Image (cartoon, rainbow, N blue to C red):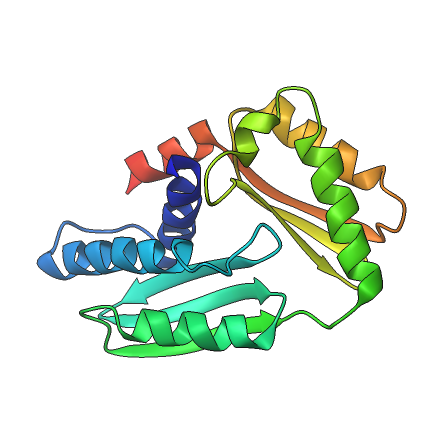
Length: 183
């Protein structure tokens, strides 16, 4: 859970820039945490979906990718119900339906989470490594313990048949911690 929270907090910090200690920023940060809980507790949110949020003055911007249209709609509705949300800007993209991409997602998940020592990333209701596949183009997101694990995950993904390209957007715990300290 910490890894996902850190990844989402890191995304918030990137979009929010340097935060001041004003009451409004504190309100937005608490609102962000509530939104994060709401998205992570969504029962249909899987490792094949990736949603990030940014908050400014109670206006929430959702971005990312989901595998089915109802997920985008449900997540938007869940976020809109969070106390303090003024408006939701939904920029979540729905990935195209593709049995080829579905098979690739499963191969990637088995290969990555099957690596020695990677079982720990798969524990819990919301594993820390997310795999987004769009027409064979793969993006890895989330948080890993160190740079070696980030490289192992990327190398493992690149070796899978059908991967057209790979974006490795995994962050390390130290990168997330450093970003939080800078804010």
